[in-house]
Length: 234
Image 1: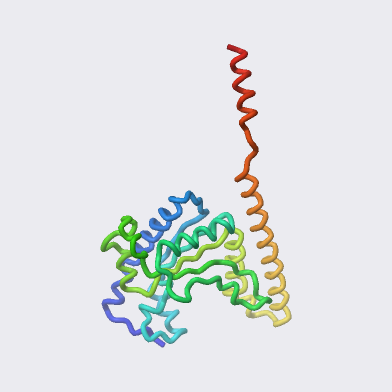
Image 2: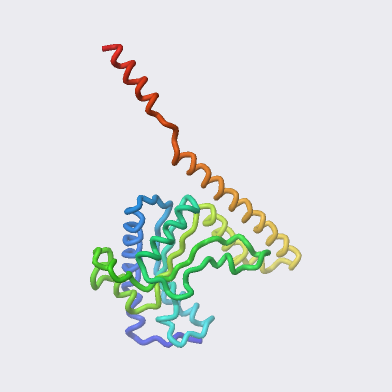
C-alpha cells in the first residue's frame, strides 16, 4: 500500500531534522535535573523514503497519525537502574500513548530472547509541565506533536545496546542468516541466547559496581588524621 499523503504532508519532511534536534535538547534537560549521566542521547528523523517503505508493509488508514517513529529518540544509560529512572521521568513529563509503553523483548519467543529496551511513544507534554519552557512555543517539536502520531523514545543500557546492534546487523537484517540452513539458524539463535544471558550478567555486575561506589566508606577519620599532621608541622 502506498501512503496517501498530500503535498502539504510531504513538506513536513523539510523541518523534521530540526524537530529531532529539539527532542535531543528536551531529553538532555530531562536527565539533567536528577543528574542522570547518560552514555548517549540522540534523535533522528525518518526519511520520506523510509516512511513510505514502512507504509508499504502495513495498511495505515492514516499514516501521518499511525507511524509513531517518524521522529525517534534513543537514550543509552550505564545501568538498569538509570534506565528505569529515565523511563519513569518520561512517563511523568509526557503523555504516553495507550499500549505504547513496553519492552518488545518480553514479546519474543524464548529462542529469540535477548532484546531488552523500553519503548515509549509520547504525544506531547503533560498538562502542568508545559510552562517550563522546555517545549519551544510554535517550535519544530511542538509542531511535530500536532502533525504526527507520536515520538518514539527508546531507553536501554550500554550492554543491551551492544547486543541489539549486533543482533540487528547479523540476524534481523543479516542476509547471511537468512541464507543458511534452518539448522545453522537454530545454532545462531542459541548463541544469541547465550550472549543475552552474558549481557544480563554484565548489567547485574554494573549494578553491583554502582552500589559499591554509591556507599563509600566513612573518610572522616582519615581527614582528621591529615588535619592533625598538618597542625603538628606548623
